[in-house]
Image (cartoon, rainbow, N blue to C red; front, side):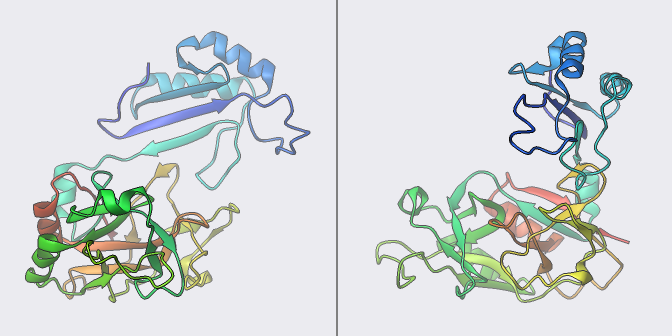
Length: 301
C-alpha cells in the first residue's frame, strides 16, 4: 500500500510496454516487456495499479523500495540514472520534505501555493507584466473578491489586490515590484467591477544557478549555455532523482534584497517561468497573508 509523503520519500514506477509500442514508435527503453512486467506483477501484486503499472511510494529508508528495485534489475530492467534519463524502464522520483529548522535557517526561500487559487495565466511576450496575461476563464469572476492567491497553472506565482496588496507595499520589501496583470482581452483591461490583480515580482535578477539543468529534449546543460529571454525556453533542475529540487547558488551577498527572480525560466515549453525567491523577512509577510504556503530553502554554498 502506498503511503502519503509525510517525510522525504521515493517513488518507483514500472509501466508495462504497450503491445503497439513499435507501431507507435516508442523507444525500446520505454516500458517493461510484457513477460518481465507480468512476472514482477505476480511477485508484487499489492503494488499493481490499473493492471499495467507497478508503483511504490515509500519513505526513503523503507526496505520495500530496495526489494522492488533489486527484483527489477535481476529481471533485466534498466533503472533511470537521473530525471533527464527518460523514457526509462524503471522511473525513480524522490520527494524531499524539508524540516522546520531547515526552512527557518535558510537565507532565501522559494514559495508556492496550491490553495487558494486566484487565477490562471497565459504567456505573452508583449505583456508588460513580465510576459503574463490573466485568463478570463472560470477563475476570473469566481475569485474577484479574493485578495491573495496563486496561479492554477503556475503555482509559484503569487498575486495580490486590496488589503493584501497594501500589506505588501507597507512591508517595504527590498526589490519588490507589484506589476498590474493585464487580461487576455483585446485591450488587456479589467472590467470596472473587478479590481486588478498585481503580480508579486522583482527586477532584482539572481546569478546563474549552480545546478545542472535539463529540458524536454532530455539535454543536460548549464545555465550559462542558454538564453532564457525566450518565453518558450524552459528547463528543469537536475539533482539526481529529486522532484522540485532546491535552487543552488555559489555564495553571494543576499543581504541587499527581499524579493528577487531567477535568470532561468523553469518548466515545459508551454508553462515556463522564472522562480521568485524571498528572504525570511518576505516570508513572514507572506505567511500573514496565507499560512498554507509551501516554502523550500535555496541552497547557497
